[in-house]
Amino acid sequence: MNRIGSLTRALGGSAVGSRALLNQLRAGSSGGLLGTRQRTILMPERTFFLSSWRKANATAGATASASENKNDYDWVSPEAQELIAKAYARHKQLADSGKSFPPGLSVEDMEKGLSEPIHFEPQTTMDHIAYNLMRFLRRFTHAFFRKKYDHHAVVLETVAAVPGIVAAMHRHLRSLRRMERDHGWINPLLEEAENERMHLLIWMQVTKPSMLERGLVITAQGCYVLFYMGLYLISPSASHRLVGYLEEEAHLAYSDYLRALDANEIENRPAPMIAKEYYHLPDNATIRDVVLHVRADECMHRDFNHMLSNKYK
Image (cartoon, rainbow, N blue to C red):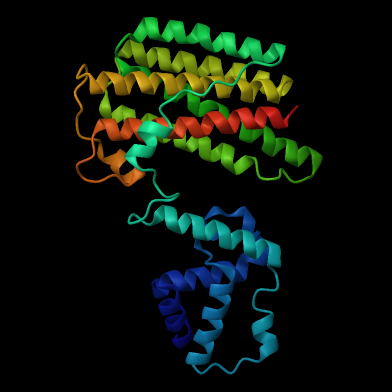
């Protein structure tokens, strides 16, 4: 019990949590540590954990030999421990409501540095097809929603959340088929999908879509999932290029939203709580602040997908 208590103080958790963590560590050799998300999140950084555990043993008067301490985690390779440590550090920062991870951009950065649209000039036949398809869809959506920018955002984010999860699934299955590493593409794609999903949840708090708009969302999502899955099987490069152009259109759409807010065409209401918590916004944050952060996310997704498309060539 003294050992558990010392470990609890070193990790800043409860005795129950520490005991559960130790049980997970002991079961790791049979259950597979990296296959369980919860274990990945709970494991502290390797060096901190090992030193804290050994200090706890010394403080509690443990008399275990050096060889016993050395073999405590011999079922986890050094590489795996480093990966777990990085994952834990990242999730810990994300879970800390008092911090922003990654460090937040200032309003000046988002207004000036990210206000100008960046366009990737089509270079191949597939690039031209993807670009013209996005231009056509933009005309359709603008004709349907006109100045209902918040409603437009709901449909946009419903579609934008599809490519990341589809591409990650393809990359995951490809890695399994070829029995080789993915070299770090899967997690960023999943994070992109999660980020776009959070955008949707934020805008759902701002607006209440009509039944017609909900029907459009369901139809658009179903068609786009099937289309994008087929396209990714044929040409991953064209798929990521299409998403890059989709994000370019998203940047333009949110820029129009900002102009409407600045012109008082739309009321600049207080930001919903989910947006404040997600972006670590102050209590007096408004919809305009949310739009700035969402547009910054779209800039990141735009550049990321154009880069992935180039990587496939």
